[in-house]
Length: 120
Image (cartoon, rainbow, N blue to C red):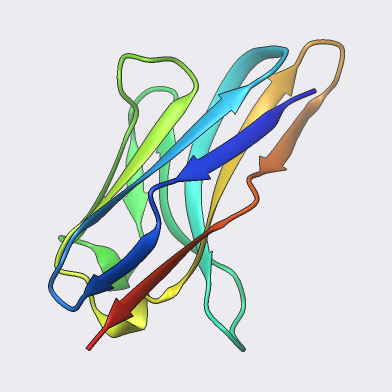
């Protein structure tokens, strides 16, 4: 069974930095994309950043120039480096992977979420 586990959230002051990590484990045959979404109270879940298996990235306009998504040499891992954090970045951040599990068709998998709180 595939699992996505996030870590790295927490409380930080405005202007500070955090790095989120997400590790996908289980019977994974291939990963197409890995992404970070976020959901603030009372708002819809929104895409923050996405990276494809070829290394292409795209970002929400609100985080361009401040956040960086990357996949290190370790397989099935994705980072989100968040700099110059603002109070409006406060949300639960979710890791998402579009992947192929052995014996299963391509589908989306989600982590449990990690809270990021930015104080003013």
